[in-house]
Image (cartoon, rainbow, N blue to C red; front, side):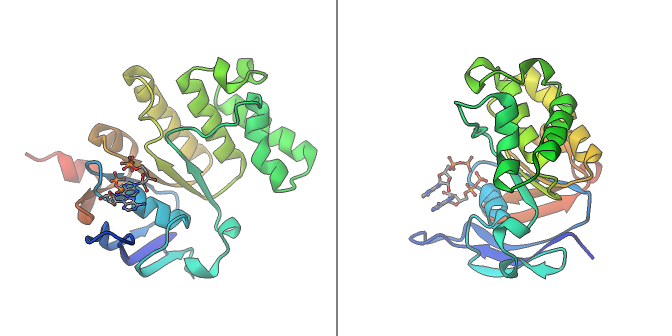
Length: 227
Ligand code: ADP
Ligand code: ADP
């Protein structure tokens, strides 16, 4: 059974004449790293937001672990989303930012500590745990955002251009880091980017989109290696 299945997913925003996403079909296996690639406006974020449940599906069916998504409450869907603008709490330290979601989920204190320590260690944030976001670099902030997603132990990671605000050098090193985290925690990841190289170096399979329509789906080698 596939982990996530999109069946003829379509999206037309109210007031728009055109569909933003048309007949999107895809089966994602457990532990796969999938990238959605294509130019700005081709429907990547819209598709991701429908999977996250932030955006209504106009028509089609979406299944997560064989269950129709609209039959599962958002908090039971096991989804973590990482955004490009980090969305950290400015008044909280690194460790509090990472712990916050768990406190809301009423996780016991000692367990929160264990998970936060694990994430901080994995992300190399030990030195910065008492700092607030304004005293961190862009890369460190993005790591905190990843930490928040990791500690929740969710099975499905959705990432919308998480590296696009970072400088080129950091983008390259964070690629490796995100791939490593994906493998280490055994997640299934859907990663949105307009950067083909990013997709090629990170993803198991790439979905190429244009004007709301899936053009190709395949392994990086099969899509880009031939002239
Ligand atoms: P991206 O290209 O990175 O997805 P955009 O700058 O296109 O980001 O969109 C940013 C936000 O604006 C999103 O929340 C999106 O839903 C919203 N948005 C984009 N296009 C429109 C539109 N035509 N009408 C209303 N909201 C839009
Ligand atoms: P991408 O993520 O590939 O940049 P989006 O999914 O953000 O593309 O946008 C796909 C299309 O849907 C664009 O034409 C955009 O203007 C439109 N769109 C996105 N969000 C909204 C929105 N909230 N309201 C209306 N139109 C939107």
